[in-house]
Amino acid sequence: MEGLAVYTSGLFWVTISISRKYWHSPSFWLVIAGLLLVRRVAFVAILRSYLQWRMIWFMPVVIVEGGLFGDDSVPPVWERQTFIAANKENTHIII
Image 1 (spheres, rainbow, N blue to C red):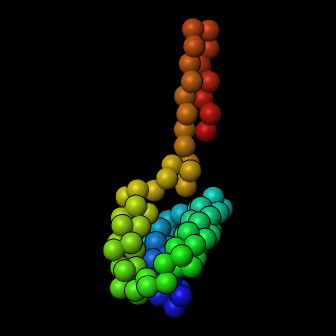
Image 2 (cartoon, helix red, strand yellow; image 1 turned 90 degrees about the horizontal axis):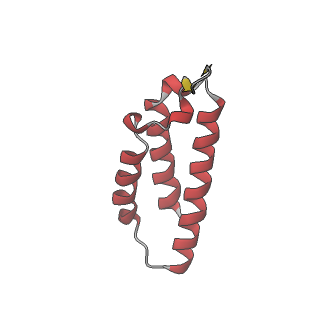
């Protein structure tokens, strides 16, 4: 279980530190908290069912997760969006 704590802490520290420009957004923190919860629940289930899990096996998982949640793959919910919807009669702009 200490491997889970070490690698989770490292992954989220890096993710949060490279995403500094989103710190002002409450949705950023909700997404981070949600991802942390999902990761924790999934790994607790894995570690309980597979007792031979080695600490080094977290490394490839963290590399894949880091690539998924890096700064270039920011979900649109973290950034302010402008949507333009139009039909024949009028145009709606939502900011």
